[in-house]
Image 1: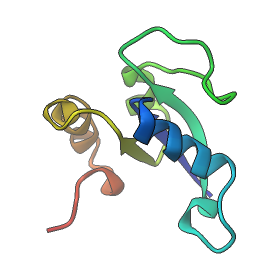
Image 2: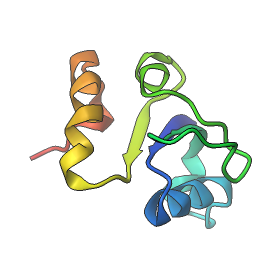
Image 3: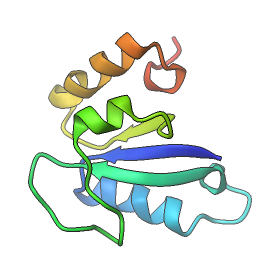
Image 4: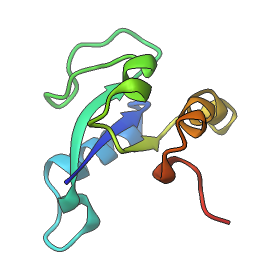
Length: 94
């Protein structure tokens, strides 16, 4: 199992959380455990998932992947710290 975080909880982020909480049989989501979500707004739990800070998401050893569900121009703010950690699931293969 891989721990995952969702960055952004608009429509796309909410769907990613839902998919990890109730994965379809045989889907890749069965191998993921949602460890939290990151939002620029202070929110209560979302679908019973706890909000964590971006710094916590970057530093936690139990988070192996991130679903970045924010506006395109804000992706770099989260991807760059992950790249510095040299985690493979955060940088797209080209």
